[in-house]
Image 1 (cartoon, rainbow, N blue to C red):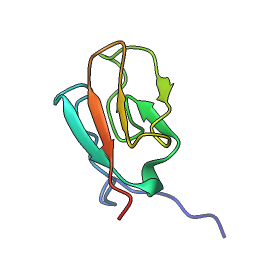
Image 2: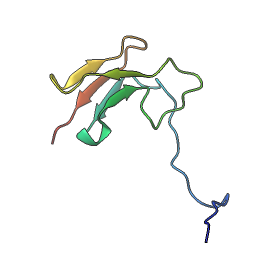
Image 3: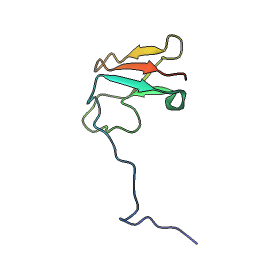
Length: 72
């Protein structure tokens, strides 16, 4: 039996892309991209992947958003 989504089912709310300039991410967010998957894309720059693993910090060259990896 097929399942249909109705308008009453909850969907995760998207956050505006590039709305803030500092983000804390966890290993669950890897591989890290800017904008992140939970952000609107229509008003943002192209998605780029950031190498945060070696240092625990990365900065997007498009929008300047800074990401800090919380390994804990």
